[in-house]
Length: 340
Image (cartoon, rainbow, N blue to C red; front, side):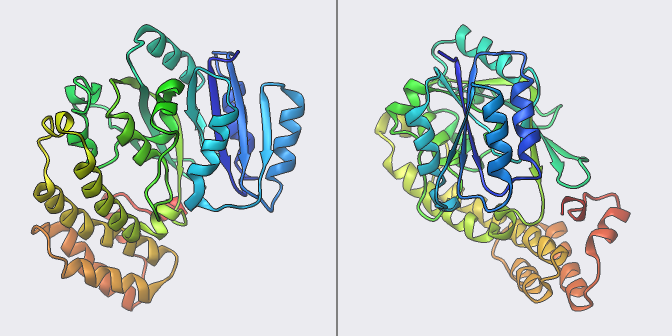
């Protein structure tokens, strides 16, 4: 019986799925099964996966009619139902792992039977160039004691503001995942990792691997970039509901409240409008980009002068159909254009 069941949700990833699979086959820890869940791909993803599945009995390929990303939790829960491993790991078809990812997490989870979720640092890289955009969490960043989630629920004081746990790095104790009803979701919210992590935070300690154990591909056409504003609003609404649903003992450990969360999301909303506008400029959606920049300028939030200045600059660049990323890079800022 494998120690890890790796759930790989994929859709039209013919350019990337080979690298994804190879990163699993190349693991120094051999005790795994890989369940590839193809959500109705129309390219060559299926034929590539079938070829690898025929060559390695640890790989299982499952094709389903397209459900779409808003039903990703159903796809992952199907994989959970047929999985045989003690631990469940998440890997999407366009990402990959470092070769010692599973070994490090196996050692951590076996040494700490109380831990329900293990995660680590991720390298975010540009899709086309392969250039590293960022490392999350960044090296040099102080790791709060609360991230161990001991006592249970304490990490919610951080998670209620932002999901800083990269899905591609997590391994979950299967028994606990089943206890919470499998992978969770927010209605109208495409990713399943955040609501699932919140539920797991109510169940037991977490373990942080202080190494880069995975790599995450980013580009301007991702749903998290295209629908960033809508996703933020969904997240804000559901976080309030989640806090209200907590039992009294967990609520008593929270230092966050509705007022502090709302203040945080007002600032985040302004920043998100600016980032959304920049990605729309890259996609040459000039009119929509200008709308986002205007909303950022007039957004009710803290002063955030640098972000408001960026929004006003974006309005000008959208009017002249100009390259804002080139200007920002000239001033030593991170440009999103490399992420296309």
